[in-house]
Length: 159
Ligand SMILES: [Fe+2]
Image 1: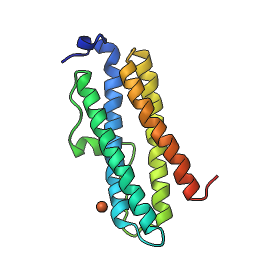
Image 2: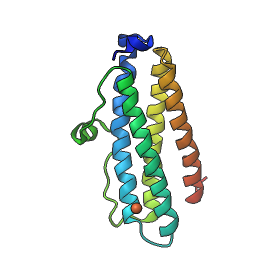
Image 3: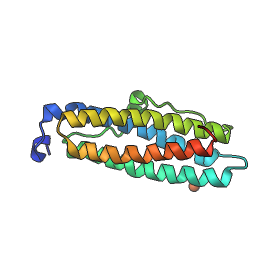
């Protein structure tokens, strides 16, 4: 499989593939953070946030698979080792043990801001490469996080 099989230029699409792998790395660290929040949440918001974090990591898991398979569709192998994810991810791991519920919400919001920024870069790169498929996919993922940002900020009583 090569990008040319789907009428795309391999050289033009390379920046998109590289960014998708970076995106994948960030998403994996974000995913594991959400699981940590789901497991270690304590306090009065337990029932609300335990469920919300599960909903978010389930969505992230599906998104991760779509990103990796888009890389394959563009003719390249996706990163699949945690050593690469940790090295490439702008999003950093945190210890969720003992973290307050609102600090967890803030940590998730910070991750989402980074992911949205990468998505905007990806949409620009895919637009330049004429890669409408990636553009459309990433746009949908971004809209989900834009909306989730509003909801989490509202939950936290932020403006
Ligand atoms: Fe669970």
